[in-house]
Amino acid sequence: MSPAPLPDRLNRGDRSVITILLIAAFVVILNETTMNVALPRIMADFQVPERTAQWLTTAFLLTMAVIIPITGWLLQRFPTRAVFTLAMSLFSAGTLAALLAPQFPLLLAARVVQASGTAVMMPLLMTTIMTLVPPHHRGKVMGNISLVISVAPAVGPTLSGLLLHLGSWRLIFGFVLPIALLMLVLGRRGLRASSSDATAPPLDLISIPLTALAFGPLIYGLSLIGSEAPFWEPMLAIGIGVAGLLAFVARQLVLQGRDKAFLDLRTFTFPTFSVALLMMAIAMMAMFGSIIMLPLLLQNVYGLEPLQVGLMMLPGGIAMGLLGPIVGRLYDKVGPRVLVVPASLVVLGVFGAFALLTPSTPWWAVMVAHIVMSISFAFLFTPLFTVALGVLPPRLYSHGSAMIGTVQQVAGAAGTSLFVTVFAMQTAVAESAGQPTPQAMLTGSHWAFLGAGAVWTAAVITAFFLRRPPEDADDAAGTAPLAH
Image 1 (cartoon, rainbow, N blue to C red):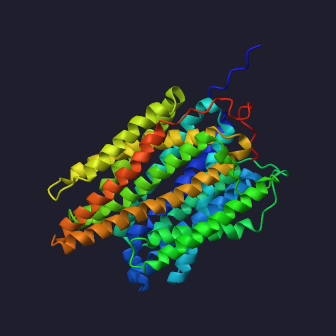
Image 2: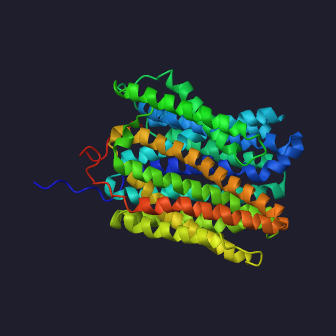
Image 3: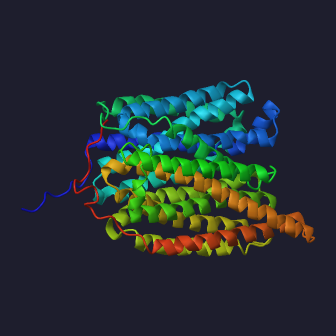
């Protein structure tokens, strides 16, 4: 007897769950990129230097890096509605505290609370989709995740710039807060309640401090590279982070022998997951590095205002997001390699074009190149997300989602540091050779993009090793029931 055909569409309840989680994730990720534009106003209001103000971003990244690995355990131990409520409550409380913060330390603490909620949302969303959506529809639905991840960071700086034109930086938090509260209420109503998984492992009290010791100093050290900090400071932080990471891995290997891992590293026993995660890491490095490099050039070399720069970067981000669902449908039909290999080659070409920029290059040419690069990333991220999680059995979905989230934060910080360090060093060399500052910055950017192209070559090679997960990857059981 032939097997029953897979359903052509999700039922109404499951679609509602995914929609709520997508909108909530959009709101919390939007918040990640709104602070950079507002830093000068905050520095003036609280009378703090740039290095102190930058902690509003650095502390956010540090908190994300520490909290995300914990979500693997949270998603196993507690129902979806409970985890969602925790995430949105933390995010809303942090947003309210930031809106009302009378002093800089309280604003910084509020950002840490915000980040704690943000860190839980993306693994929760990805795990839910992998659990609810049949394999032959995952590409299309994962495309919606790509939309959230792409459009929200792109819209953040532009929205922040517009709100700053209207008034204080507090408007940013005032704008986000009611939306976050609305999603909290809708999520509480829309997500069904059930008992938690009694078979989930107990919380390992040794793994939590090891998580902080590994990912916290590592992200902090990477964020300091290229800054005015003395050379030993980022190196010491990275060294402590690497030592903590080795200790964390050793602890998880011990716990895996008892099926009590905090973050199950058996995800790496699936070669396709490892290949997709490696390429995703390189892609995040390239994307975050470009995001910080292009605004520097557009403002300091081409003389554009911050709002103009935000508007120029917006079309690429929107194009990448809107293409996500389309790319997802294509993935369901043709698989990953047909999409990822050409896209990775186009990105390599764009890096080459950026390495050839001159003072006479028109601004619109930079914008077009950014749009082309963004479209190419759209053809990369949706297949990579789908392949990475699709090859795992249901018992490892939450751990795989947490692993992806952690790698995104570390790779994003590494990419930013790589670009800034090469850019700063080569700019200084060019200035010492007598080049005027704008031309020297352009020379520095040439080397930064050439370095990015060299690293990206590894992504191009990796793309040829991607394989589409078989539809029986879910332990031959289709999709598993989700504890709402």
